[in-house]
Length: 444
Ligand code: ATP
Ligand code: MG
Image (cartoon, rainbow, N blue to C red; front, top):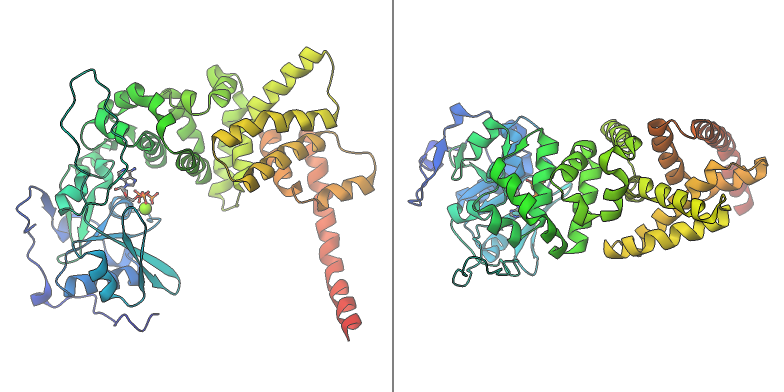
């Protein structure tokens, strides 16, 4: 616990509470504590401390974004973000354990032993020039968003109505400027404002719509959906690292199958990853969907799957197709050395386009190459040992597991490798203490 933060009483004295009104003269609905399910018990102590200190110092202190949405749905939030009218330097002065971060928009991180609480000053969408004539395609891409604003403006610049709710620590009420509560009730992902503008400003919002819909089991509201259909090709204008991170977010957290179904349905996948799209569309690779299902179950069970395996799952149907086509062209099966060169040449341009880190690209290459090696297990046990000890073995085995369980292909090879690896690890476990002893003795 940080000594800088005094222990605050979660029950604020009556005279410390702000009246249950917005005080900004802005239109908005205030939902009283008795009419919503958010309990302070569900908010981490450090987050409450920051909210209380801001409030006591005379600032507005709201929980915002995904945390309010998730708490209202009685889900556990991933992180708790705070919005306030205090400026970054003022926040900085209030918390010695804080630092200002970000070049474009300055946020304050308040650092606790086991948690970082992010506090942002209310901001608004940047000013734009005069509206252009219809038919003209003005470039709306946001390049500067460093403008402070009011709570209403801050709600309006957010992406979806369900992500624009505030929880006010002053009176424990929920503030809804945009209609997010109604959309939570209707289970709808609705973009705030005009989809034509909002998706052109930031095309990644289209992927986020898909993410929230599949993650929460919501529908994408009609105008939002049509907006995606109209602007899907503009996803190519978004920064590749951000898009790749969003793709990983779709694969990582247990809702990949629904998300990729929606990416196909909204036709976003086609511009995003045309090679993957070609390989899986029209049920060309039924095992791909099964593979995502198994992946989602694996992740939900708490097993950590590396980014390289996640992306390899995505690339696999395409790689299999391309290899098969190449073998047809050559009129014969390729040797493993040829397969490896072929896979490298195949995935390098895609990894470059996705701006993946060199390390990740290398791991994907290794996982896919090793997968093909595993499909033809060597006859000799010594050669098998060498495999198990090589770095990409675990990734390749995880990939083979997903592939075999989903396609029904290569199940024998998977079983053989899996039991061999288990035996090796067991033997390693038994041998380990002896090895340590020996090393100690030598040192003496
Ligand atoms: P998660 O639970 O995954 O963290 P989240 O809703 O908190 O979901 P974040 O990416 O953490 O999502 O963003 C926090 C908040 O910032 C969002 O709830 C939303 O209000 C706003 N936001 C994030 N990305 C955008 C964007 N591209 N355009 C507009 N607002 C955004
Ligand atoms: Mg968040």
